[in-house]
Image (cartoon, rainbow, N blue to C red; front, side, top):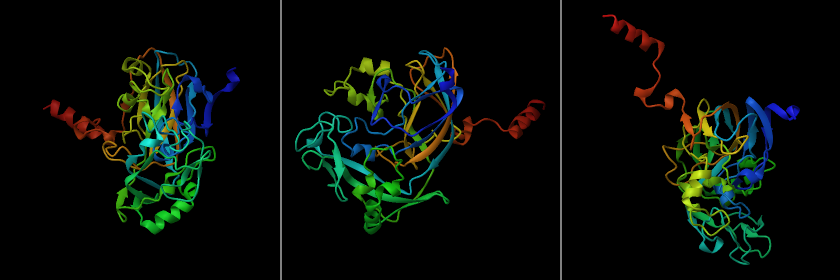
Length: 346
């Protein structure tokens, strides 16, 4: 019914690591409508939560009125606000006994063998995530090198902390990460990593995984041409051929720091309604997520979505804000255009 189609919706429900047609839609918005959401951290929190079937915790998708397969959706990122007070990250090691083909996807208990086991938290540190059934340490990931960083949002900087502060944050991890009530991940602050204390970092938040729903169910972190290749030939339920992956994916997991307020993403529609979802927000990152992980945070975001009819795309087109363009490619200012006119008249 038209009364169920809104100009604006607020989403605070999440998918548990999957994206795809089977998940349905949280709501439907009008063409040109707005989506507001609170997004839990991606990567490390979901990675240590064995119930999850992907590496993120993205919002339930929102349909857009009039969007059909073969169209595109223009997603304008209007605003973004970091809610986390601190987070942890670093480079990873894996526990081979706690997964099958892919530690982000087919997790299992190394004690009782239960796939995607229910888990509980006991204390802090890397042994804190335990199987509900048998009590074994069940997380498939740990830190090779890790840090905990606290944020000063007014000054747009962060500072890594020592072991005492990391332990304090771990004891109130959900509060410090600002996990929304419906989030099901274990906060990574529990692991209290604390190398490189006293390191200063500038903050410029962006969205790592934003776009449209693929035409087959995928782990949310694997809806990409690069990371998705781990699905090719995998023996878990989400394994597929390269041909199938290329057909169904929408490449929403870009992890580029240019996907920030003011930018526009033009995304393919591969299921009717499009199914816009948002996840994996970061406080900062360089030119690429070279260590596989950066500062995953809870964030509040708002986007506007417009339908572009009959624009068939394989993946997204990113229109960044002007200052993120190379100097020579930025739009000309009024003064530069006037100088060009004067030069032409000489």
